[in-house]
Length: 467
Image 1 (tube, one colour):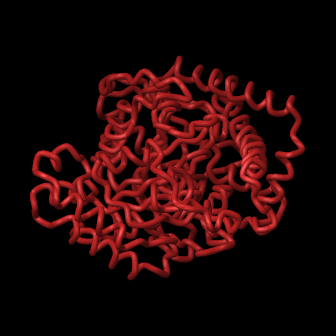
Image 2 (cartoon, rainbow, N blue to C red):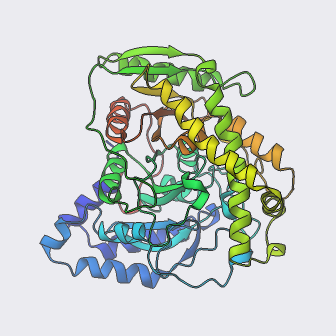
């Protein structure tokens, strides 16, 4: 296995390097990769102070931290992490002060992470690209002319480049999984209710948004999920986490994405090869057709656009944002949200329930579902710009690129993506796996099986570690 955050944590735990040394290498890497546009803010002193606190801990205290001393970055959307004000990629939030840690941020710190900066996000997460008007343009380190995806594009670019080994990310409509897929990383979107959302709670995006990380390995995804999930204390019920099922599973295989979102054949072949790899481990492959999933998938994409509009309109009003400082797409989305009636909003609430019901029926036939993550290679920079007000075209463009991304969010079910090979341009061929609520352990076990095929290798080393 290639080096990952767990590798770095083990080295730190053994005293092979200090947390201060690890922090200095990440700070240097951030500076050397400045033109990547992945990191929008660095606070070296806060990072060094966090590292020094870990170095001063006793051996027993260090042993309790699965990621003790590991440098990391937070996304400029989500959290918040104390001392790192969230601007959500927008000029409208410039001047916001650093809030106290969210419950999840506190869990990150308790796990031993040493935070030193924020990563780039598109304005309010409204794009599967990562090019906020306020800057910087974030590029894909695998090919700088391409996008790293969004909205956690800065996080994914930083991890793929090796600036950090793992980074905080959020997912409301594929925003962990799409950038992970673009950058050759592992991205887990947890079940609804699995991750702490306090202390503010609220009904942000109707419960479709969640937070975790983008990772270099399945074991890192498993370790961070174990470290920070569960006992969320609302606002949604905690899922009943199931023990991993590792033998004799019925694996659904969806090797198409519909006539209106035709997928690159290389990406469909990767899905079929992933299914064959699972079949050799004793699982049964159950082919599915697009019609088996089309209704909830399409409804999820449509509902995501509506929920984004009403949520952003309410946010703008609640915080009295100066919307003249926002991008054209943001202004158009806010305007649409403000025009929505109570009946429109109630219809969206019902849609969430119906999507979950319809998608759950798929799992009456299979135990997990292997399906497309992206229909094409990562898009060129500029593919998802938000400098216009054609909302429908923008959201449809994103749906065609990642047609099943919003389905996990609207249904609440967990999903994971990981690379399973490379195309002719040495860009990752991602696979996505879905499972029922609370079945993260099974997802991670299946992903681990695929990762052990060693179809993908990271081209850039982690700062301070060899590959």
